[in-house]
Image (cartoon, rainbow, N blue to C red; front, side):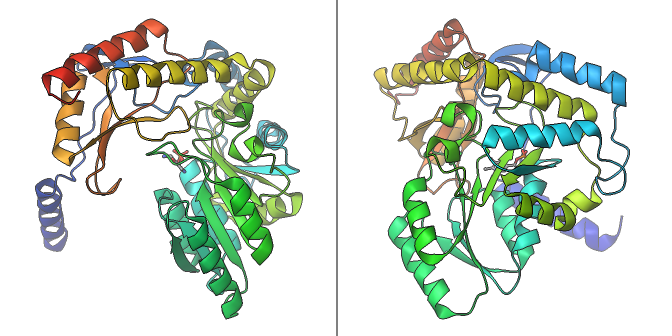
Length: 395
Ligand code: PMP
């Protein structure tokens, strides 16, 4: 190994370990369903984003298998050479219909969708107003664009209006975009869409909503923008196919013109091999299931409300989530880590979330109840929460 690389890695790894930022990775032995097995032990899984239980749904598995038989395991090329299969076209038509837009473009992940879509439209002559709690992929997409990045205090509409006015009236920028998560993944709060659109219309802002955690959850599954009846107003409805949809991939839904532009300019679309046929078919099936059967989304909400009420009843602070995301706020970072460890040992798989992912002093354990959990599983998880909480004198 190059001595410079060795020094860099030794110092870097040591530094991460000292600061408690070194990631240890648990390995799930088998499927990531409502019950998972880690180190040979079964745990109730409250850490996945598999909101509707689609990741292990038999109809999605069958659709993926059939498409794999028909098309093979790989698409064979990037989209603009000959990696656009008819199943990709069908997928994009389905996404557009689902989102209520003219068209849609699919990417290989939500992360590279944000990297590709933001940087395909925004340039160094522009400015991006970005909510302070936006996801890492938005931050990286903004950086890649070379635009001036202006951080807006989280969901602070006064701050947004002030900064939008300043940016637009400065005359320094050709375009100004506001970009926000639809649902914020650490607290489960929802972007203030009606106020955002009012400000955007007043100042002529481009609006980009990353609805990774809102799609399949809000708006009867169609997402945050649909929940507020704004499908024809928001320029970019971005989302991921890896959470409620249960598979993998990302997309932007919007006007035909926007999608035409992204298909000729977004670099991950141009230079990275397209989604596998199996994944594409599974997503199409997920969208069909959601469209034809409201019980998936209804069960998700029923389970989430059930779980939240029970945790609150035994004395936990579950923050101000407006969605199934259920944080249990502990405050102290070390306490959050110790609490999660104890829960896992007792049979509930959760992740502690601490600074710098959330502000200092707001350490928490995040729970993601899903439509695939049974009431018995949730009851058992609550019983473990009660036992560990009492032992640790948290409740
Ligand atoms: N945006 C947000 C808000 C997310 O939470 C995530 C997933 N962590 C992504 C984008 C990236 O999506 P994917 O996992 O599909 O790359």
